[in-house]
Image (cartoon, helix red, strand yellow):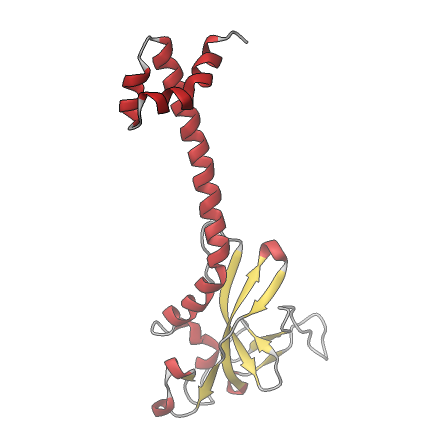
Length: 194
């Protein structure tokens, strides 16, 4: 499972954490593919064409990760949620998650738990918030420039049709003087042949 957001070149997902500091994600039933902290797959020692893997029983925790396309980097985010082996010890807010008995594959599919997804998403959303803000600023800036060009054209057309600065100002919600100051050169440019 991964998360994508419009305007962001980030992919968020949950990675398994192993006791030796390695991470894992994806794989087949009862096999979690190993990856380095930089997000690179780890090759199998005996067959370098295959990825190394570990069983879900070796998972000691989870973190949210992000593949940040514009920066060509893989980021492992805090906090760490630690695996507990007794369901009564689970306290997500305190960073403890129960993922089934050691023999189950539940540790590999922890991000599928509906009660945990909002917690993981919150961490990822805080990570991508700056990029989303910049995307919004860029989109609104482009829209504003388009609207300003349309407004300039409308004022130039109104002036060419003989509409007074007073009426243009009232239509826009400013004074006659404000309208004249803002668009005098625009309406003059519209009258000047190119």
